[in-house]
Length: 102
Length: 213
Image (tube, rainbow over all chains, first blue to last red; front, top):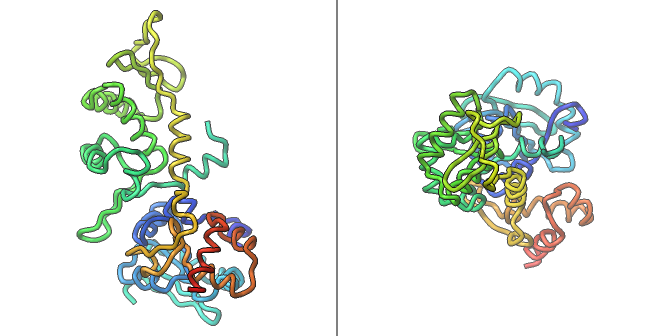
């Protein structure tokens, strides 16, 4: 979906960070000007205690993720462009976001 | 030279401090020393808390480490390498260990610029056979060593600091539970392998085993 929309998208394995911890991934994404996409609650919660870079927590199952992200994309994209450090939580029903501890 | 696809793949790849020893074969303390003294400059050197620094080496950084290692194996002193690197940096080379070609004759080092000319007009004499340090084989080494380790295939693991320490497919950040959800939803092994190209059939079997146990 992201590539179809003209964005670059790649996985942690392509970054060679498959064997590494969450902080490594966070810093990598920030340094590359990228936005992390995760389904993982623990990852997001931990990151929100010390917000570095931008990440989206997709609180849905993997099969629905593209459809849900696509549905909110026009709302979320401007937020991501405006903020260097930001978390976004997307569920089927709602979007929430912040840039400090939550 | 890498093609466009390889170049893009290389531009996205990094090696964390935790993996750098395994991938370069040089001890972490040595690499830290080279880094702390400015001989190599990791692409990322970020302090994220008072006590936690994240250091990541990109593809070219890793090649640079291998170049130093090879020059050291040819008995070129670290001090000499440092002088060369500093001079090249002052000449405007951002990645001095990989932007020029190195040739050695004994302990003497000759540098050839990308255009083919030799640094300071000094080239190896015609009657000696210089040992050229080719970069392409080093590039291949980095590519090979940054692939997922075969030992991890078909294994699961927990890693502190990764995804809340939940069970993961070894050598990846893919939770076992995620693959299980695919199986539960009736997705075929082929569909799972397409969704997660880093996985192998043995990994899917490992997930089945975890959930049968």
